[in-house]
Length: 336
Image (cartoon, rainbow, N blue to C red):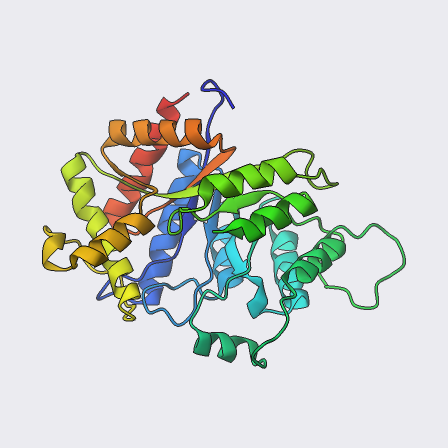
């Protein structure tokens, strides 16, 4: 990738529920952001599956994707991701086959291997026995077989709709496992460095080195997700960023909840060890004014050679969130 190549940039939305708000409020905010993203020229807009988290409203990912797709026209929408071990592959094939039938050419299926929840919630979702074998690779291959069906012998079980619809499949990960599997299957790969940056460069190297071309993808295609909080001044951006920092502290304390309002001084909230942990987890974050964001994205692009960058921004105030993504897109456009 060269500096002259137009950077493809996308949005990750966790449908955050700020303190004092409801999931319905979060959905209205997500729709406003999706419509703005389409207007500004963001390439795709993904929603992430989480469960039993009172600060995240995107549990029914496919339903929310359908809502946003119905109120936009050109934006690519998808999952970042569907946590496949929580679901039977046939159900996901039918859900995304339905979405792809309603909104042709606009739907992505990003798949993750993590549960997106705690152990008790995981059991409530799966209604399964502990120690179940890891069938993630086989489940992904089954989805590919259904979506890539080409008039051979009719399968005994088929998703309706979904069979033969060629829904794009991505593998998501924060370690080497999905990078290696994506390379083996010839699929695009997205790395979740917005919360787990430690293995980013190792995973990208492994993915590119081991990539095997497939009928779906001729050469590696890697997307990197980071946090971006932009404002008119770096001071304002740092203030807004404290909501995300607090959210991570609460999660690590075992007390996840609604997205907190920003604060002036984080030192009154975190301990030194918590500060270290949060700063490590959120190290792949660009926080500042338009120029600071431009510099940060240029450095990320240069260091990772990413084909696409996805931006996450957990911001308490709805208008400040919209303004942040607008400034971030302007900063990306400045890169040329």
